[in-house]
Length: 142
Image (cartoon, rainbow, N blue to C red; front, side, top):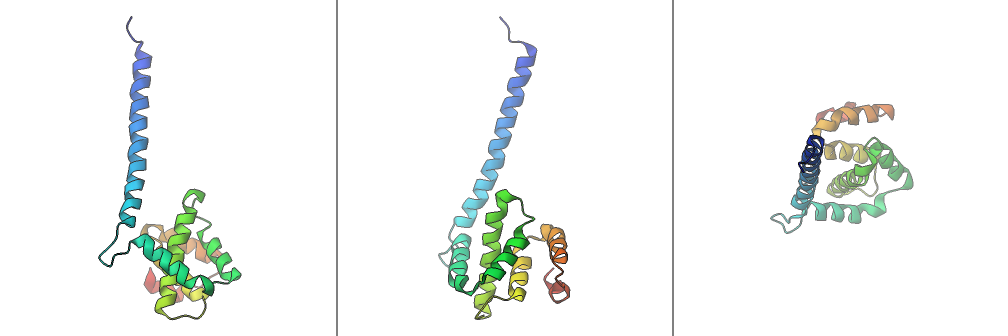
């Protein structure tokens, strides 16, 4: 007994969809894998992020943590923790380079801008403007 035509199309679409989802998932897994590979100094990008966060965790006040949470709120919930960690790592790096004794709004905004990909700067600017933050001192970072 031959297979109905609609069932053949259903199987075809099912397999195309399955392979497509697996390819998309593989792409994101591969990106994460590349970030976890050690660089020439023996530490990966993720290791450095963790180091900067750990070294500067005592500099953060509750108010500054709330500001960071507000800044990453436009990011979809699924990616928010990763974005927050990346931004906090960049802010920590800037704080260590500046030998800061506490986190400042300037460091947080500068790290937020530098850690955000260029393609997302449109939303970054909108978010900062909603918070009534003057972007004039940070124009050179865009």
